[in-house]
Length: 441
Image 1 (cartoon, rainbow, N blue to C red):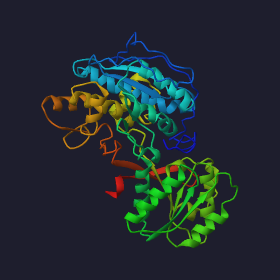
Image 2 (cartoon, helix red, strand yellow):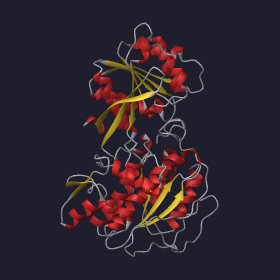
Image 3 (cartoon, one colour):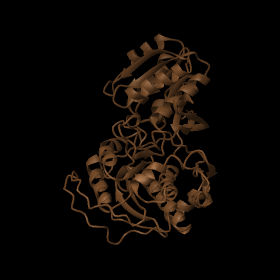
Image 4 (cartoon, one colour):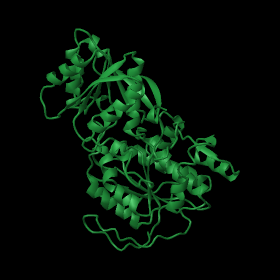
């Protein structure tokens, strides 16, 4: 999830906030996934989670997967399906014989309310001698814990931290993502703007650490398509009225308008843009945080002609794979499937990389993560891919989403996005899906 206040969008959104109530959760297991009853001893953790003293890593050939996802608070609905998806992936692998002749073990902890509590949970996972970690979910937490992850002997894969801040994080060789960066969302927005037929666009963005780099990425994506950026105007979440900024953007050019905002101030800016173009409605392309605006009535107040010109982009994070959904429901009948594909992919990539590298050690897994996702025979499950590896073939793991390809920085280089619009009541409706590649490739 993006880093706007630690979340990508409103807690009311499908891509909801990760504002959690902390507390470590005891390790748990499901059928086919074993958990060590007595983890290797630790030298201890301070109350603030800053101690980094961990017992020497054991090398017994067993792959231990740590899970650092929210299990309580308002983010629990995200962690619920993602956590179940990891358990499904591990169960399927163990049913197929495990990894390198050993059953895979799971150790699960709650991500907690913030990076401090998440740091405590991560240290508990490291003390339990996990080799890899699925998580964290929150972008802010991923940024905060990145120094520990890249500096310790562990590998992490986040299913939902899409912040641009991780794109060029230094020495990020041990930190992977199965969710595409917001830089690809910028590509999707630029593609949709290009398809309007307009030759130019003006950009409105929330003026903070989330909006500024996003706007920069969108500008670059538009320019790669030879589209002119007429203006780029920031707005503060603390302002009550955005009429002046909207008028400035509309006056800068006659092309499309792009809006990068949060659910609250972004919704108000969207209304301001709609009102400023009421006499001559313009194409307005918005980011994912506005898919579930703070107030649906705000959008319903727009003129129908203006509302009809609004198109949004959000990453496809609700799994449509019926086989995976059925497996999730066997573990948790209330699982929604939110971020399930991405979490399943993280776990399966780890296991396949361990098989290809013939080792459960983090360095060996790191070295194979990208190679199992690109350039070989296509496969969608651990069993299928492991059989190909046993036959000495290269594999291209595509997962239940049918689209996964890690780029050189460990992020997906291709991603699928929902294009959405708003109906007469102001509710979002998916209209189609679009696929984009990094840097417009």
